[in-house]
Length: 373
Image (cartoon, rainbow, N blue to C red; front, side, top):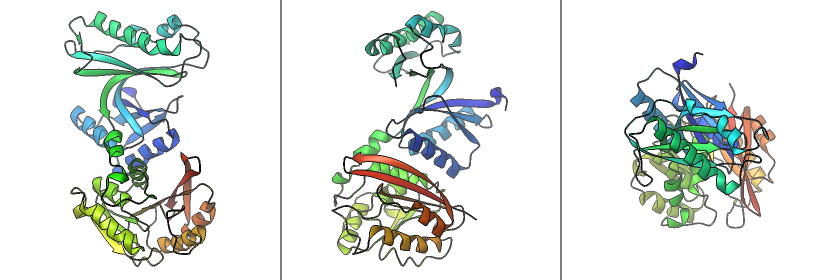
């Protein structure tokens, strides 16, 4: 495809699990049905986004904004101006690093707007200055080159009209115009402890929102959490605009979930709660478009006397009867529980597995099953 027919952006991913972050972006793009291409770079924390130029610039930015606002494992997105990728140990001093991105690369910018340059170092380029010097030296370099070409631009570090971001790592350098931050910080503040009803087994809202995104659910479809607990996934799913239904077998937890859902004015119309059993779902085939769940485990949770593996394998039989082909089932379980191959056979599904460290005694395994035809 002709590069002139493409708009290019790059995303700076969270370092906690870059593979999961990229798959989250892929899943959101899949749900929206747009012709957008994710391109890997030689640094796992940077992913390029390429779009066909079929939309006006404003529409293009609006779409990218919605994509980034929904993602939780992305820090920010920039309009890509240029990137330089290099091999490890190829550069051994700052001058050679500068030579790899000479000012010829600096594109046509707004000649009069105020600006600042912000540099983020991911990993230290081998042998180039001290780590503490790299960020400031590169920031100064780009700031001076911009002012050389556009003398009427003004530096404003506190409230600039434009922010130019530089991401530098041992593998390369990316330069672009900052367009959007994700809502990670806002989502993180919705901690489960701040809800009217708290249970120690509650998952943090960042990961709950990530799991919802991994379902690749589309607008107007129904999302089911069959072990909904205090309602965290329902809250995040409905905040994203999806119709959500949760099932919970513990009566005390049901009342707690009701309190949590009622306290969130943005989610009331989109959320339904059922006091029932995940092993007896009762939905028609296709009524539910995707499943997301974090089933009970750990000392603070109850599996109603079932072994967790037995409980889930029985549940997968129920899920198979209600989910249509190509739908997804996303589940988080302890990494010590080995059931994905048996589950895939029951569901007639392919799957992806990701591991997420929580604390010393718990690493979660996130399984994304995609049902086959």
